[in-house]
Image 1: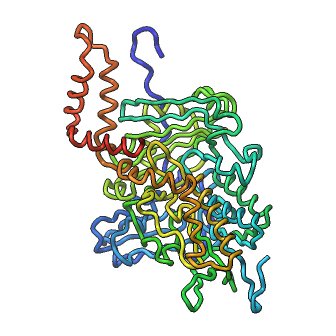
Image 2: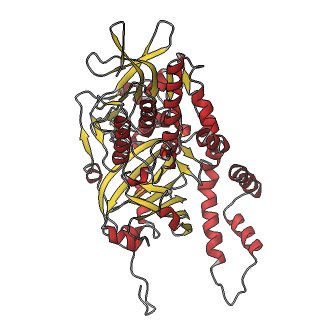
Image 3: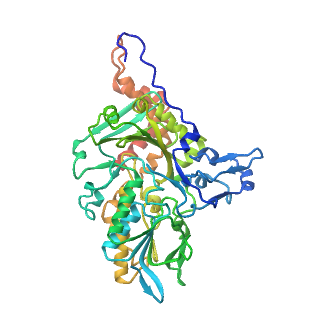
Length: 107
Length: 440
C-alpha cells in the first residue's frame, strides 16, 4: 500500500483460464462406448437447453438447426445435464464402463 | 470368503462404491466377521469423488482409534471463517481455535483420492475384498422380488449377496432402480465446482495467517450472482481450493456457466490477493444432495440398504456443511445392521431395520432431523438476492464515519438499509424466525 496519499495499487492481475487449459488439468481415460447419448431430435423441441450453460465441462453445444451436439469424452460424470434436462428421453445417462472416465487427483 | 451355496458363491454383503460410506460399511462388516466385497467403478477409490472443504473424522474414533496418526491429511483446520459478501464488500466472522490443531483434532483438509483410498485400505486390511474398475449395472432379485445381488459390467459379472449396500453416490442408479430415489430431482441438488491452485506452503501460511500444518476453511455467501448457493476456499499443504456450490435449478434458470462463478469469486478483492501467482492444478465438479431429512429416501428394502450420498446424507445446513462424516456414519450403521441381519438370518427390510434406528440414536439422523428445515433457508432466494447485500451495506454504514454529521442511530440505519434493499419486514421476520427455529 502507498503511504503518500496516492491511489492504492491496482488489484492484482488475475489469470484468465482458457477452457481448454482448465480441462487439460484432468486425466480422462476415455472409453469406447459413449456413456451419455443425446437424442437431438427431442432436443429440437426444448425451449430451455439448460444443459448448454449448466454442464461444468461445457460438453453440450447447440447446433444451427436447434439440436444439441454432445461430446462424452471429457465428462465429469456429475449428472447435472440429466438433472436440468426437461425433455423426457433426450438424454440417456449411464456411468462410463469400469475404470474409464474422469480421474480426479485432488478432488 | 463368500460361502458356496448350491455351487454359487454368495457374499454376506456386496457394497457398491468404495467411497467413505462404502468403505465404512465394508470395514464394519469385515470386523464383524462377514464376507464382504466392495465394488468401485473408478480405477481406485476416490477417483470419482470431490468434496468442498473439511472432513470431520471423529466418527472414526471407535472403529479406528487414533486415526489421526495415519490419515492422509493436507492441513488441520484451525481457522474457520464465514464470509458474507457482495461484489465489493465482505463481512467475515473468523474463528481460530488452536485446540483444533491437536489430537483428537476437529476438521481436516485432504484430497478425496487419498482419503478414500486410505479408508478403503482399512476395510481391505480388515478382510474385505475390493474390486476396482467395475460398475454395478443393476440389481438382481429373487423370485419374490427381494434383492439378492448385483450385475456388473465384467464378463460373468453377476454377484450374489445376502445384502447389497448401495453406496454408489449422489446419482445412485441402484437406488433409482429400486424405486427409492426419483429419476432426477434438480430442486434438491446443488452443483459444486472447484479449482485447486498451487502455491508454496510458506506462502499459504503467510497469506492466510497459519502456522505450519494449520489450515483455513472459508464458507461464503453472496458470491453466486443471486443463485442460491455459496462459495468456499480452503487450504491444502501446497494448494488452495476455491469454488462455488449452486442450486442446480437456479443455475439452469440463470443460464450462467459454473466456471464463470468461480472466476468472479477469484477476482473478488477479499479473495484475489490470496491467490496471486498461483497455478491451476485441477478443475472438478460434483453434485451434492441437499434436500436433507425431508427428501431422504426410504433407507432399506428386502436385501438392500442405501448409505452416504445415495441416501441423501449430506448435511447442508448453512452454519454446518458436512458430508463425509455423515457418509461414514451411515456406512458404519449399514455395516452393523447388515452383520446383525445376516447373523439372525433375516435380511428383509424388517430384519435390516436396526440401520435406521441406530442412526436415529446417534448424530446421523438426529442432526438431519433437527436441521430438516435448513434447506428451505439455505436455498431461500431472498437470502441470496437481498440479505447478503443488506448485511454488507449495514456493516459498511456502521463503520463509515460521516463527520461532520453525527453517527446515525443503529435502528435508523437498519430501517434505511432494509428499505434501500426493498426487503419487507414481514419476510425478514419470517426468515429470521425460521433461522432461529433451525439453529436454536
